[in-house]
Image (cartoon, rainbow, N blue to C red; front, side, top):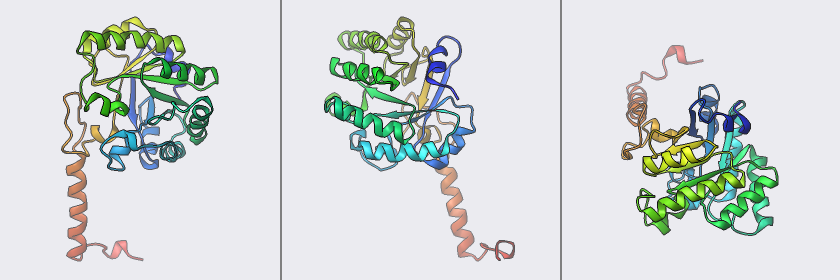
Length: 262
């Protein structure tokens, strides 16, 4: 297992590979793969439950999926997203919410944002013994504030905020930072500035590692093809062909045959 400590030490030594994982069956596959870590992302609200944004994921939903992933993974680092507003309800609620995810099986949490309140919450969790990964750039929980899923950091003011916030997250004790939908040169500057690993999604080639949504990289969503996404299989067509073949076999009497009967 790549522990949080090993994760930190990977910077400049080897690239880190992360994929999202939301359930038991995919967790078992990831557990036997070369992937370094699994992210139980709040993107499950969109990918699994069909919501338009991630804000519909609450702490109980995240804990439910985290526990399913934990039952399938024994030797990978499991990181779980703190969902929308879960760290903004006071210290008692912060610890309660974080505790639910840790008890469900997460070994670390990921929290979006670089504002002072978020950094204070992250520092409090780390001081309480809970490892935290930061997340800057496009922070999907703030999609309504941003007006959509758009590239962040194009303007100097926002780029400066991302760079400055990365330093603050490192100082707060984060063991890594996700940079999402950020110009590659800004991501490069952040990666060179801080001593903890940067993990990119739509942030270019200069990162210490990369994360992708498993369902996206497997091509399950035929209508989703952003520039940053590389599809490693055409999952949609493969599954469609398989279920249609099954339906044909049922309808023409070829399934089940004698060898498939008791």
